Amino acid sequence: MPITLRVALATAVLSALVLGFFPGLDREVAHLFYDTQLNAFPVARTEWGKSLRWFGMYLPHLGWMVATAAIIVALLRPSQPMPMRPSIAIFLIVTALAIPALVVNAGFKQHWGRPRPVAVVEFGGRHDFRAWWDNSGACTRNCSFMSGETSAAAMLVGAATLAPLTIRPLAIGIAGLFTLLTGLMRVAFGGHWLSDILLGGSVSVLLLLAARHIILFARGIDDAEARLALSQTGFLLQASLLGVLRAFGVRTGRLVRTMRQAALSMQHQFMLASDILSPVLAGAGHFARVFHASAIELRNALFPARSPAPAPAE
Image (cartoon, rainbow, N blue to C red; front, side, top):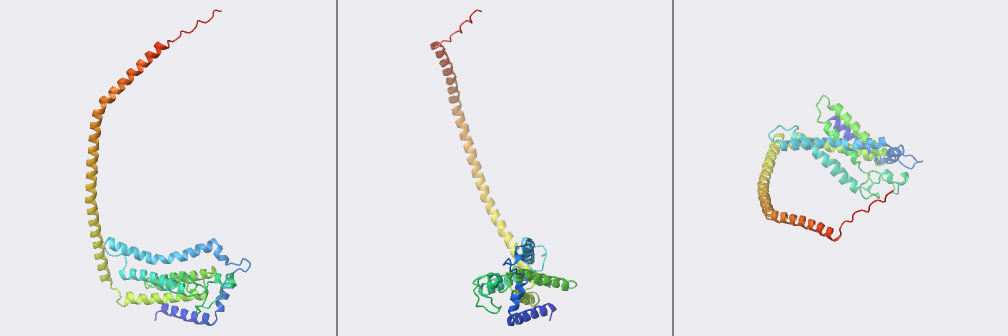
């Protein structure tokens, strides 16, 4: 049995038993991060705490994002080698979507009524504390059990199991430590209990190890067949796109030609109109000049200009 599987299984079983029989340990650990004078979890108000939480939330997404990029590259360049084995890409994407998103967030958190620490009476909330196994809490949605962020961080353990053998133990150790620290940050924020993060992380690791065995080692996905399917899909998409562009290009050409003919026709009409209007405009200008001169002469005749009076002699 691999060491990763044994550690995850032992963590899940011991956490479930110890924190199930002694649920007060959850409250004792939460009290370590709670300030009774502020009536709050002070780490949640610090900038460094918010930064660490942001880091823990988004770093685990790199795995499935890289895998998605590899599949997109395979579709865009179907004749070129894929930068990642298709089975590994599918493993990273499926585990990231299925375990944290479906099992933890959409499954447990939406249907397990355990209130978060900030929502219980002891920490300024209105609800009563519930052990991890007690589903009778007052929470109705986005509840405490299990920790979604810890589950997502555990996906890094799955990625670490794909590292070369020489560095795989170190990679798995670092990923496991990152998962634990991400969970502890949620406890420090008052968002989860200790049992939420231990069970969320360990159960997620067990599920991804099972998915790893099915997808990568139990002939669940054949790399050659998957690469062939991606290549065929890429060529089909390219042919469809070229067909659309060609049809669009023909229609665009026809539209451009029609608009050009209309523009030439309008230019011709303007030229004809200018040929007709030029004499009219010239006659109107001449008439205006004659009318202006006649008006000046009539004014001078009716109102002759008076010569200025001679200046008196000194």
